[in-house]
Image (cartoon, rainbow, N blue to C red; front, side, top):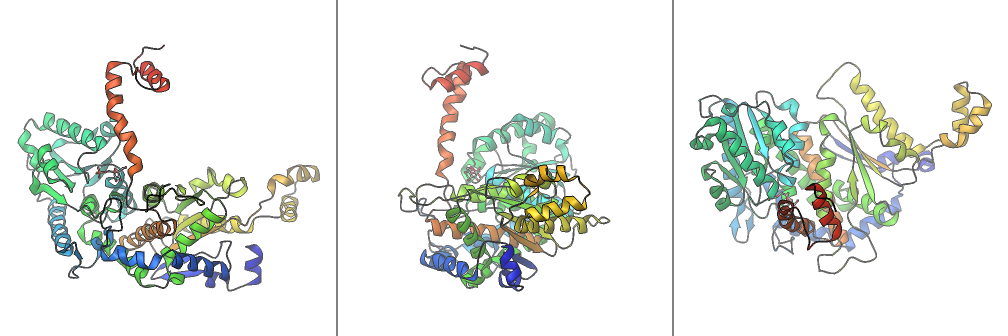
Length: 523
Ligand code: F6P
């Protein structure tokens, strides 16, 4: 890469894309113009364009579950009809959005009152996976836009510590629980929801007060009613919204409660902007397609089994966790859409990351000098939501320094010269020299945006959603099912029983031994 930059002063321009304020610089990759042409040919041959149309048009692209995947419909402007299986889903989407608006404005404006007549100060979202990660990530990212909204807390884990800590300082009179579950059957969520109901009723002393303090976000009306939540307080979505693609639906209610419905709609508008770009731009100038192809390039041609996402943006601290579900639950498949075992290539990468600069002081050593080949996505705002002295300039400089260092590396001669200018002894220099060489030629993308506002965040999330989708088309996986989470769920019931009984004689010796150990009956 270093020599390619030296040979071509226009390289950055040739390998950059701009969409409004969002710049994707992908010039620090091991690519030439020819590489990109061939990768675009691959996308075309694998049918990315017709599959893209199929997804946007409401075809049942989720073939194993015989469903559409229409998260893009949730962010379309109102008024444009979209027929799915004969129904104009946009009318239902608009109605649910109005419901969200009325409710979020009532809570934020203080006209929705708790059982003692006090306004809501705290909202606890109970959900897991897609019913948690997206809203939690967005609420954290856009906290500076929350102005007069209630405080939002997220409880996802079955570990009682999560619920206990989140509610420790809350007052039942001013707390609203949002039970978020597409299916309304998920073990973790329903266990936390029952605990929340108990917590609340103990304090309120009156079951009927639940109506003012519990709302549900779900597709399952019967289960919501059976749980005891008034279905007038239920916000609906549909089976064509996948869990990890659902933050744009009623699952986004905590976001609307935090930042207001207008800003939530600005998030939707940003995602829609990316949808239009993805749908309309030619493959070679299409941001999600380019990101997807670079991922395929490293994953399948260089055996890079993971990629790191490093936002130099503390507000995006939960973005890597959100992407883990988005990418790994979508493309972590070894059977293709046709039911055949994937052979000859690998599918979904491992996604991981942490915000910079923290990550510089933890895993960057390995990125720079380790034996693994790990491409990186950097994310960086031009302006901070929290301007503070010289912080942002130094943060931005650190981000640019890391991508430049990964790309350029440092030769033996450069390392020697650096140590000489630091005044080190010759003997020390010679001993240390091999450790101070950086191979370089390590790829990264940089996504640079003006400011992390709701619109931009919507664009960024949709960018990765479509990237994952394009890769699924290339790998012929169904990005919208997740059968791989089933087995562990099924085994949980019998193991809960075994823990009660203190033994699991019919199970493998490891599991049985662990059960006995946990129940204090070793041997
Ligand atoms: O992890 C499996 C999964 O089904 C995810 O796909 C989903 O986001 C999560 O569980 C939560 O599901 P639900 O919203 O139905 O509670």
